[in-house]
Amino acid sequence: MAETDEGVQICDAAVTLAFSVLGKRWNGMIVATLGTEAASFAALRRSVSGISDTVLSDRLTELAQAGLVARTVETGPPVSVSYELTESGRGLLPILDQLGRWASANLGAAAH
Image 1 (cartoon, rainbow, N blue to C red):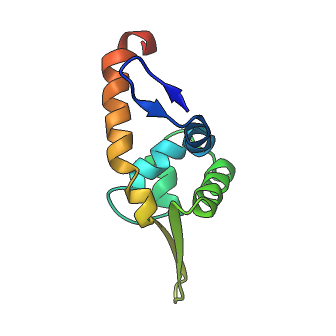
Image 2 (cartoon, one colour):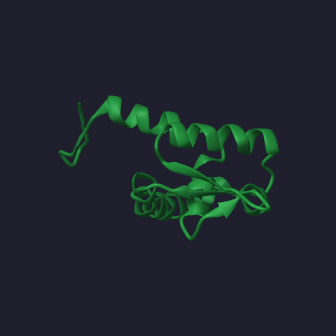
């Protein structure tokens, strides 16, 4: 474990694991988008501007394998598929909000 100047201990392996999922482009945006309600693939594609169908499909699969997103198939007619956050995924929402606030305060000038 590493220790910061404030004496907070950070588990290097846990942080590495978290960023192996959340550090991938689009994953944070997908989780944040699903934070409000379940969504279809098409709705996610519209909400996450710039993502391709292939990448969205890959990211949803990864997030499901990590236990953050659940995929539900409703047999029709018509058949519909929706995605929603699991309890574990919902636990990320306050963390993403806090990370966004930190980025705005500390990286805002660097991002523009």
